[in-house]
Length: 139
Image (cartoon, rainbow, N blue to C red):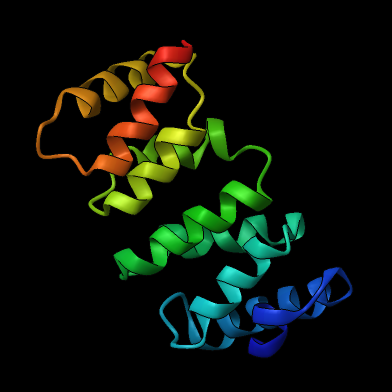
């Protein structure tokens, strides 16, 4: 399943999704086999994996895995921009905030305020600020 997650094509999406579900069911949201499977369902855009990815995002103790789940959700979950992307704007990981800055729906007052705060934060990473400024310029 890991090989398919890394190299598989559209025809392998179901197998990667099944492996992700099985891994979470048997090993929980922090099992060592999750990172490549999370990446794989995101790379393959497996929409059916969105509920499992949301579960992993919410339940994992790993901030790195939470970030990977956010990237996968951006690709696989059509509701990510109005859902977890908003929460991701406050994540402790810069990469996760960057994903959120690109995806979070700006119609929410909390999102617009958070984007302005991230843009003004001199300690924020360049990638986050670039994504935020791009969003603010287009708003």
